[in-house]
Image (cartoon, rainbow, N blue to C red; front, side, top):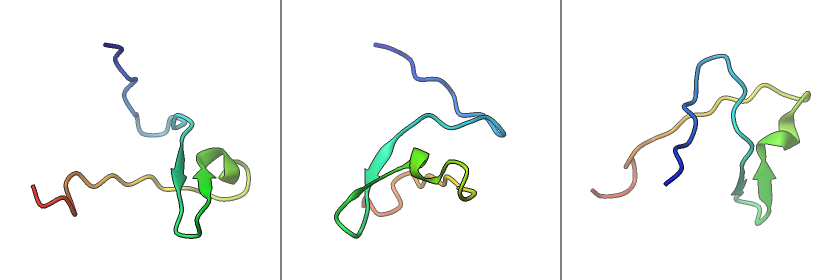
Amino acid sequence: MTESPMLRYGRPAPSFSLPSTSDRDVSLSDFRGKADVVLLFYCYDWGGI
């Protein structure tokens, strides 16, 4: 198993893409140099666990 790097405050986030509500993938790199991006993670927020 490969360990993933820890996210650190003030460091660049790793590249990733996620599906949007408009049926297309949105990549973090789409915003590079255009807008500030805030990453927020909710663990089990909607999961019913």
